[in-house]
Amino acid sequence: MEEEQNPSETLRLIPNPPRNQPRKQPPSPLAALLLQPIQWLQMLCKQLNPTFILGIALVYGLSQGFSNSFFKVVTDFYWKDVQKVQPSVSQIYIGFYYIPWILKPVWGLLTDVFPVMGYRRRPYFVAAGVVGTVSAAVVAVNGNLPVAVALGCLIGITAGVAIADVTIDACIARNSIEMRSLAADMQSFSGFCSSAGALLGYSTSGFFVNRLGAQGALGVLVGPAAMLVVLGFVIHELRGPNLPSISNSDNKRKSLYGLGIWVFDPYGLIGKVQSVNPAWDVEGYDPFVPGGIASHHIAAEAMEKVEVAIRDMGRTIKCPQVWKPSLYMYLSLALSISTHEGQFYWYTDPKAGPAFSQEFVGMIYAVGAMASILGILIYHKTLKEYPFRTLLFFAQLIYSISGFLDIIFILRWNLWLGLPDYLFVIMEECISRVVSRVRWMPMIILSTKLCPLGIEGTFFALLMCIDSLGSLSSKWAGGSVLHFLHVTRSDFTNLWLVVLIRNVLRLATLALIFLVPNVGQADEVISSDFLDNSSWSVVGKEDEELQTCLNKDDDQL
Image (cartoon, rainbow, N blue to C red):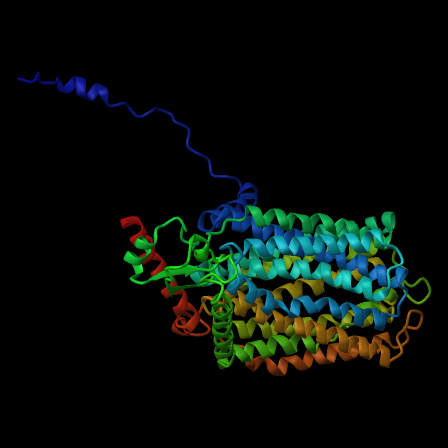
């Protein structure tokens, strides 16, 4: 018999609750406020892959944020002081920087259709870093470069940034489709990283231009480009289907597929059942060998997938819920003609303008970057629940009205109001950046909701290409107006008139707001059935199912 246990002894085994245990005090409001960004970042890392979050930080923060802002200030001084061109000509040259961004659908198509060694994203981060590193090094170490060569190198720097941007955008677009509730959070984090990087780039640009000169300062951009190469080896990505082992016997292949074998190309891009020629030896099954069974079909199958992707893009862009907001985004950018180079030359002119120093010009943009972060916080905390149409209407209205501050500054009415130049220009830059960021965020979120699965990288790149084309149109139209009204390196008489034309065109954009869908930012813009049932996504699902079957057969053997 088992020995009965004394109930009193059993009770003594249960520990008594500790007396006078201090209660956990809630954090103070200040500590809770400081912990919010950390907790938010932890949530993103938990829901998404931490290396994906790292990729956003490096691409948007270091490559796009820091490099773009640093590049913007340094190249302004490069064209003005090194190449000594007119502001209208400088603005035309700067318009060419947008060409790599207009080619974003090409980069997106490459990442979607042409994996390298089974990877769709990682190799393109490496390629972007190599292009940017070489271009920055060439323009920094070679003095007295011809305009064409210098422009080519500067375009190469922007190409590296653009390729990395479209690659990370493909990851963001896919995650936004699969996890719709985090779409706004991913864009907010991207915008925050971009603004933080821009703050650093603008803050240091004037210092490096003053110490190294505009040409030497471009060498700093080698660092961010090199980090993209590192990212290509670090970011997590599942490798695509691998080539079946060529050590398997022909009998095993025949038992699996009858008289044929399943052949993948070397990059895991496509696969197909091919008949077996008994005369082939082991090398005949190697797709790297010219004349092997895979080499005859790789090009045809790749082109077939390109055609499917293009067909799906054409089918999607014809949808009214897609082309209408895309048209609005293009026109809202193109009609706001750029006057940046005219104002920049006026800023630094010792006679007609306020004669701002190199360091102060960088500081103006740095303060603007801080204001851009504020714009992201305003959007994230208070505006992401508003419908797209309502938010964009009021953002565009305030954007148009704030542009008249430039006219006040150019005509020097700020001095009549008792506001010194440095204070007024910082105030104007802050207002402009906050409104611009609030105006831009819903456009990006709207774009992510229009992308079909399977070609999300390519189609999101197409939408961003439309935006880049709008920016290019804005630059070249603004340069043409500067030239037509005779705004030169020393004559700024009509600069205020150019800015007035820009502001009127911004107001005219309000008449196009009907093109924006009147739906909430968390709602579907187009039906999920339309997004999921594209021919590309069907092909992708069939490929996954077939690969699963093949893996099971290999396990059984």
